[in-house]
Image (cartoon, rainbow, N blue to C red; front, side, top):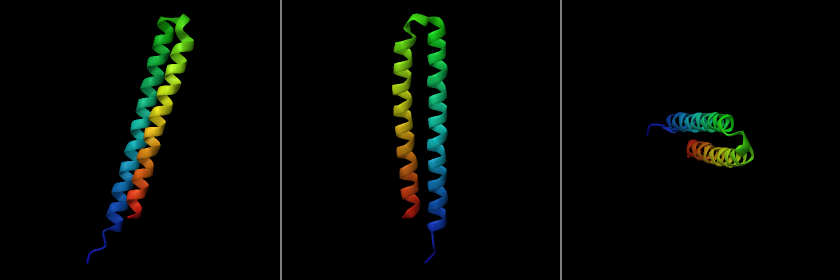
Length: 76
């Protein structure tokens, strides 16, 4: 029987890397949009920052979930 553990580990590492890449892009877009919104309407900066931090935390949570699933897939 052919040992397939190395291949699954590589695929899991690629999946974890894609999860981190997606999170980085998402947080970058959130930050850029928040800066643009604050530049357009400085009076609403408090509300924009709060919404930005909540959205960034949710994106980070999803990315962490993706990385954990990728690493768990590598162990099987």
